[in-house]
Length: 190
Image 1 (cartoon, one colour):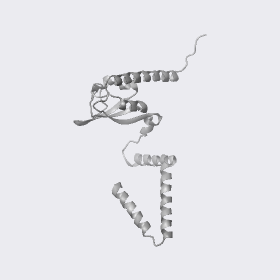
Image 2 (spheres, rainbow, N blue to C red; image 1 turned 135 degrees about the vertical axis):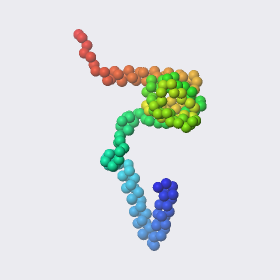
Image 3 (tube, helix red, strand yellow; image 1 turned 60 degrees about the vertical axis):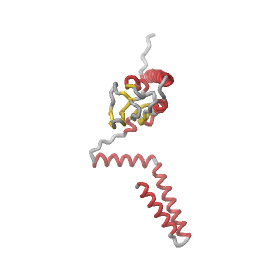
Image 4 (cartoon, rainbow, N blue to C red; image 1 turned 180 degrees about the horizontal axis):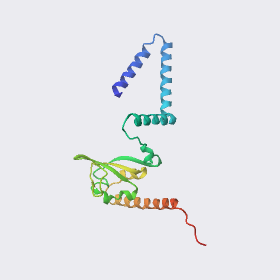
């Protein structure tokens, strides 16, 4: 609806409430409006309603369009501490003026899905290892939320390099733990 639609609805409601001939009718209208808004809010918060609407929308898209329907939240495990986000690279950021090879982001569990350049305005989907990240680029990243937040705060210089080494070491330890948990136990000889 936009701002004009919202303003129109609010103005109409106000005129309707003010136009009531007596206080009793105005109070009834206000109560009815409040209950309706509360019911809409409760419905919008319901997981069951959301799940049913998602199923209905998926069914409609499959049957009435040529769009491929996927649950990207589940596909990317976004509810388990991972996220897809955009990160704007500043002039003093650790990421600026380095190639993807120099950044070693996959060693920290972070993947660059794309780069939006401002000068010239171009989008680089699935950038290559020799692609250089420039100041004012907007990166589309996938990875652990904590790592993405830390990467956004990291500045160029010795402190940024030290934070990078610490993140690589931390991820290496995490990967060792994950491998130990997923590898089947081998029987030991007695």
